[in-house]
Length: 275
Length: 308
Ligand SMILES: Nc1ncnc2c1ncn2[C@@H]1O[C@H](COP(=O)(O)OP(=O)(O)O)[C@@H](O)[C@H]1O
Ligand SMILES: [Mg+2]
Image (cartoon, rainbow over all chains, first blue to last red; front, side, top):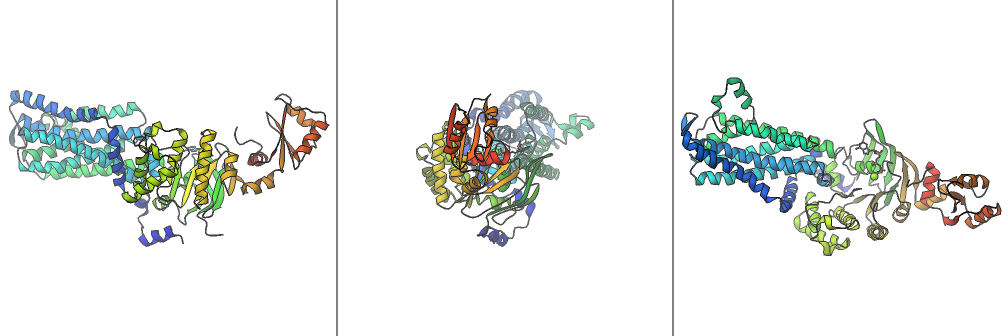
């Protein structure tokens, strides 16, 4: 019996499916991404963050003076305070999706980075999780910065706004996972464009700028299936202090999104690089 | 023989309905330098990827360091060093960081990885390139860095897929020298190549593969002894005349091969065979007597030359 064999036996690892796709070391993939951020285009990063801020200033402050207050969960809040949490959730989504789609798309289709990683003990789940956690960090960073802006202009209306921070992590995690899961099936730039083709209407319609009650019931059901709507409702509840048990469902929704994304990304990496 | 570090039995790999590897069997002993020699498309890379535990086999048995790669991929890969056919260095990181980051993929402590990375840069003669971008390295340097990277985890087996393909002669010799050092230190090497000189220089033992099957196995010298004569006379009569000249040469030497660009006569004494050719009144444009090589073994086994 070889030394390796002996150590494997001693460890008694028996969960073979997970064992064959996961080495428990996504941290190494993350720190690699961190070192590689030197080659990041910071202008793109900054624009991703500035976009929601511009919406907040132009629509929230500008248009808001015409609109006055909005009813959210029985509470009257200023228009700016109504759209700010929606933009907060959107900025977390933007950061996460940008990282997990564009960057991953290039690595999957043009680079050989993943091939090199997968020749080491790292498995596809280490690679997927490492990349997703990095995207999550970027999403969370966007969110955090945006929340700073919100607090500065007095748009966090309740102490529960603090809970929006972990909520942002969950939202970014969900979008990063699903983003990587979906992009791992894409082969062309046209397909990549589709992501943004989907994101824009979702951004405009997910009760971002007006309450969902304006829609007829049929449309409402569709909107309520979209992830950004769940993210926005979750964050809005927390920053405006309208806490209901429904918030928990949003968390469950994102947990499901994480699971689906991770399974898709892992399966796909395996199919692409371990064939 | 000590317990083999690699045992392959009737190994098969199928892509769709195409069999890339059709039931090959071999063993590699610890410390041995083992080669797979064969032309493009023979199934060498496919075999290496199965051995590297990154490609599941379609059939047969495979044991790497006593473990089944289907079940113990990460454990096996933690003990391997892999130099793939085409470089896959991390182009977003400079040279030294490539080594350090790669070492971290193995879960090794940062301090250990840093120390080894420094030593390996020395070994790869790239110390002064530590901060250089990958895209600014020459092909030979990239290859040496890839080998250094493959050694970062102090592997028990080093897998090299065509280590010198595409390099100029000087870069190849530098690389061979590095690999020879590893061999002397007792590293187990498994390499593929379609260069017979590379196989002769680096392999203790090799298998000749063609179309997914093993045609012969043995040390370079024993293969040459078994499948070829001691010497070969190479004659060029001009492409139009080679075939007709060969007809007139029947009976000279032990065996005659006609290639599009030359005629080969296999004989134990090349000079005498050449005299016999002249005795039949044939004058070649160029003639050359040389020792038999693995190229001749391959030609004998398959009727084709290694590099087409
Ligand atoms: N992923 C793949 N899908 C389909 N065919 C493949 C794949 N990889 C290799 N092949 C085929 O298998 C055969 C052997 O390829 P390979 O192992 O790369 O040969 P070698 O390394 O000896 O040149 C080739 O005909 C090649 O086209
Ligand atoms: Mg090959």
